[in-house]
Length: 171
Image (tube, one colour):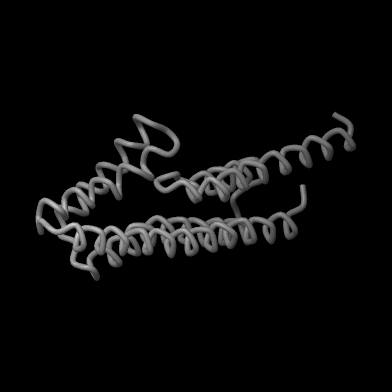
C-alpha cells in the first residue's frame, strides 16, 4: 500500500474515532448514557490499532482511571445530593431502577423521567408530604446537574489525553 494511502486511512480512522468520542461526550447530556465508556472504547480502538506500549500505555491507563472516576462520580453526586435532602437508600434504589427501566423502555429520555419520578413517588409514600418529596427530588436533580458537569469535564480530559497520545505517536 502506498505511504500516502496508508497516511490517509490512518487520518480518516483518527477522525472517525474522534467523532465517536465526541458522540460519547455530548451523549452525556442523557443520564445513564455511558459516554465515558464510549470515549474509552474509541481510545482502546486507537491503542489496539497503534500499539499499547510505552507512553501510549501510560496514557491509556490514565484514561481508564479517569473513565472509572466518571462512572463513580455520577452515582456519588446524585445520591449524595438526594441523601443530603433526606432520601432513603430504598428511594435511591427505586430511582436507579426507574432510570434504567425508563431508558430501556423509552430511550433515550425515559430515564430522565423514570429516576426522578420514582424517587418522588417513593419519598411521597415514605413521608406523605409533597414538599418533602419535592425537596429530595430537587436535591437529586441538582446532583444530576453537577454530575453532568463533572462527567463532561472528565470526558473532555479523556479526549485531551488521547490528543496528546496522538501527537506523541502520529500514525
